[in-house]
Length: 82
Image (tube, rainbow, N blue to C red):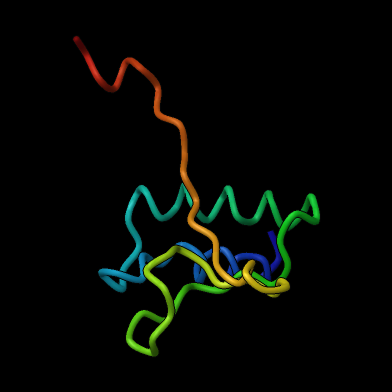
């Protein structure tokens, strides 16, 4: 991984609500980077909640209304025992 790629991953791994990296935000960063590599999203950045952005994970370059995305990651059913 190049320094630029590592820096991008670390920036996208920050949970904007707590301003820190956590397990969930790491998985979301992996998903948004994979989406970027497949050209599904352009220029993802962490949402700036204090600056008035929507309470969604990332802002992206897209035409209105596609300016923000919220990543969701499936969970293994073993994580939720019955």
